[in-house]
Amino acid sequence: DMENFEVKNIMISIASVLKDFEFELLISDHESLFNRKEQLKPDDISPYIYYQALVFSQGDKTWYVNDLEGTKIVEKNDSKPMTLLLDEKLEWDITKESKNFGDYKVYKATTVRQKGTVKTPVEAWFTSDLPYSFGPLGFGGLPGFIVELKFEEMIYTLNKIEKANVKIKKPKLNNQISYQEYYIMLEKEVADIKKKGY
Image 1 (cartoon, rainbow, N blue to C red):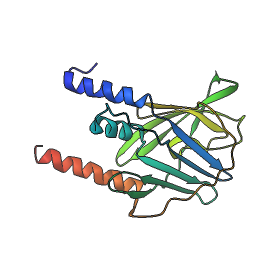
Image 2 (image 1 turned 135 degrees about the horizontal axis):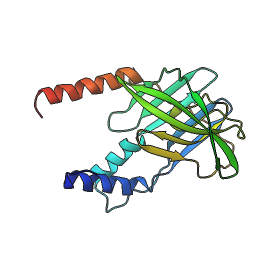
Image 3 (image 1 turned 90 degrees about the vertical axis):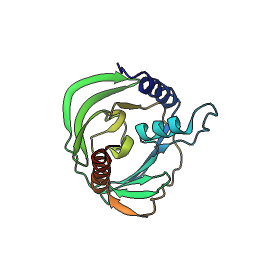
Image 4 (image 1 turned 90 degrees about the horizontal axis):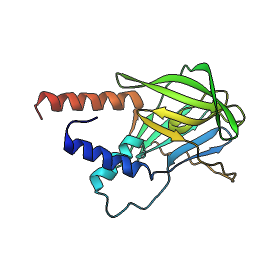
């Protein structure tokens, strides 16, 4: 629906890159780790388009959750590595809406995640047939496993489940800042740029 031809083409290119991204959610006892799987970058994709696809999909971050400790850590893996401490208490609204997802019956739940001053809606579909309370992007706390998640116009969908001996390594706490402080800082930087007329 975009009118600007150049921006529209950029978004189409980003969308085509996103189709090839794969993520993995590792689960071990009371811990989970969600990140983008390492993939070769196509030679015909510009670094700018590829980076924008990473940012749109949260593929530039690793999400660690330890539900025994109540810890959520977001590790930014770009040119300025940073550890974001995600202190959020999500209040899920579990609806009566259900559907079939492969062999599972799944239920819809909604909540919001605050990023700076912006509250972003979240839609999750979970099943109690899998004995985990984890999902993509550090989301969890539902009475079951999240098999589909919609957040910021992106949809993360479970493709397959593999059983393996997994050891999850907790991210190192380098350059720590809270998740909220980080996004408030970004909002201030954008406001300063706008004020200068760029």
